[in-house]
Amino acid sequence: MFNRMMRYFGDEVRAVHGVWRKGVSGRPSANIDRVNELTAAGVPLGDAIVQTWTVTRAGKLGFVRAQILGQPVGAPGAYTEIDVLIERPQQSAEAPGE
Image (cartoon, one colour):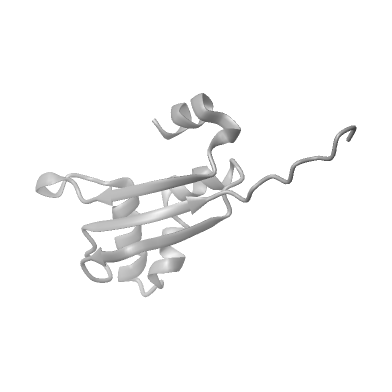
């Protein structure tokens, strides 16, 4: 779904707001499960975020910054809700004739 969204909107996208929630009844959530795996092993939350599925895919498309929005719900190894903002730098406008 992420790749389809990016193909559709293309270079117009400057940021992606990720709303990551642990699935109902403990169903898998690729991003939260990866964060929990890493933070349970002692990796700081900010470092764990950049190793998730969505952030690594976004990185391949030029998104270079990921930050946590608000207060995550849970604790290291047991997060259930995390919001992130994944940003790509503004492309500088070229001068006419360049």
